[in-house]
Image (cartoon, rainbow, N blue to C red; front, side):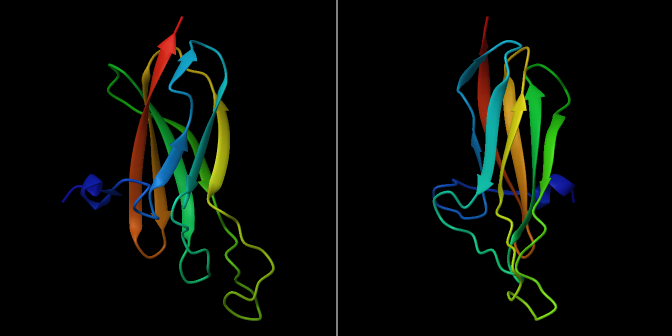
Length: 131
């Protein structure tokens, strides 16, 4: 078995676990742009002590390169847990993050999300570069 065999993928409009990547279709080489990642855009994902998205990772794989480069790791640590009991806590972090980056050439953004019950999920988005 390979680790990659455990990663699931689907259309984010039909599956609540898929990380959604929002970024421009094309960017200018070397110019900063924002990438937003979230889980539950079309179909809300539970955010309870028992069932939640724990983290999202974002990578950039330049066209023609062998390796991907990690853009960010975003932890979502509060899910209503409390000394009073599950879901009694005062704070819930939501699986939503924004990062700013620059790229010099085209490639693919890849996001992985981790659900504490349903495991790893993946999505990707190609980014073109203009001069």
